[in-house]
Length: 221
Image 1 (tube, helix red, strand yellow):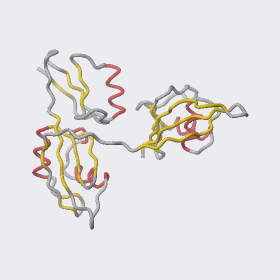
Image 2 (cartoon, helix red, strand yellow; image 1 turned 90 degrees about the vertical axis):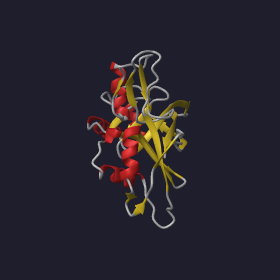
Image 3 (cartoon, rainbow, N blue to C red; image 1 turned 60 degrees about the horizontal axis):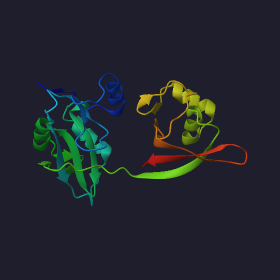
Image 4 (tube, rainbow, N blue to C red; image 1 turned 30 degrees about the horizontal axis):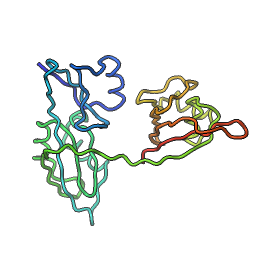
């Protein structure tokens, strides 16, 4: 019979993919394309299309009382459920969307009735809405494509400080903790810096007259 993991974060997913690459019998599913948190589903056979992931929705009036991502997470944790029990969630135009398993969805609809001081009423919906991530693109001058150099540019610190941040495991590349500061960065790699943000490295755009490189980034905001 099929089996599945809980919802894994991006670092856990990167590690899982090393041992369990996606195949006809192994599927990674977060409820919608591009989901950041996903389950690993081990299928019974190639015709098995099992997935118990559903989306719940709550419409809110935030004209006088507003809630954010931390408020929602706090309300979920107050119900003493594990973080792996639910996947991505976000607010779009006053509507809260949250992905979870069908069994947990029924529990949340019955018990998640307030977020902060805001009363909410969740319902299971048949659709699978897609979260839209806002980004901005920008250019910067870097000494090289070494990751410590790029981290220094993004965090606005010296290369020595960037290396210290890497040693303190504050930097991830493609959702795995960076170990080698001198490693070169590949185009379209995701760089996550604790306390700074998440970026996609777009590559070298041109060189300056002093032979430094102008590189491009996309930042998630």
